[in-house]
Length: 189
Image 1 (cartoon, rainbow, N blue to C red):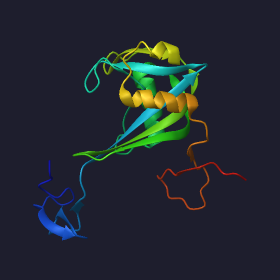
Image 2 (cartoon, one colour):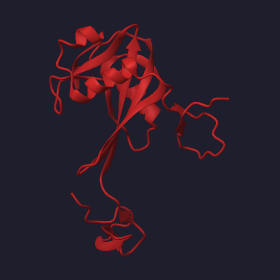
Image 3 (spheres, rainbow, N blue to C red):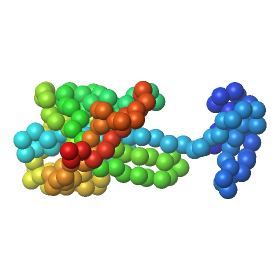
Image 4 (cartoon, helix red, strand yellow):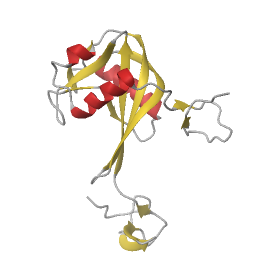
């Protein structure tokens, strides 16, 4: 759905050519409507030889087992989002270790899905009974008899055979700006 009015000043938007692409833009201020985007996050929480999964209780994916996750709030850093989502959906407390996968899905709403390997810290899986109706840690063998969603099947492979370091949060970048999170491959020296 296109925007009709400027989100900055409320003026009606017009179609304008911006760098060769027709975009909705405000004739009264500098606002340009760049499109619809969403950012989702997913967790791969391993405990011993088992991965934390949840069974979706609503669409999309109702009845399928997936890794816990959700969508970012506008003002919420990704690492806080995934820790919140894991705790909300399962009661598990986990800490971010690294980014291990990204899914890019251009569509009417362009979605990025950032997947984190997380360290299990505490708790027993208890479903929130809103978004998920079951939660638990499962071995790869146990997952074979479950209806695991397609993307999650791929992520199970990433969790158990991913290897490598992935991207980690850079706690001391040489260039920083308050409110930004920067991720990189780990430093070698």
